Image (cartoon, rainbow, N blue to C red; front, side, top):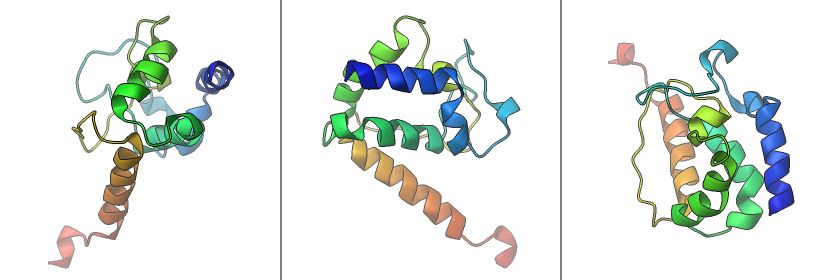
Length: 125
C-alpha cells in the first residue's frame, strides 16, 4: 500500500488526474482554496482515485478510504484532498453516507453522470 500511495502522489504532482478532467486546466486549482463550490473534486478525479486504489479498498467504506488513503496523502501538506488533487468548480454537490461501500458511491456517481448525458434538453419540451 505504501508504494502504491507514493506512485499515486507522483501522479498528482505531475498532473496525472488531468487526463480524466474534462474542463479546461486553468479551472483546476492546486493549493489552499476557500471552502465552497470551488473546493470540489470532479467525477473523473474520484474515478481515477478508485481505479488506482480499488485493489486495496475492495468492498470497504469511506471511513476506511479516508483513514487509510486520504489522510495519509494529505496530512503532510495540511490540505483537503480536493486542494491537493486540483480543485474545480462542479455542477452537482453530492452528500453521501460514509458507512456505504466506496465502490457504491463511485457507481452511483457514474450512473448519475450517464443519466445526465441522456437527459433531454429543456428545449425538447
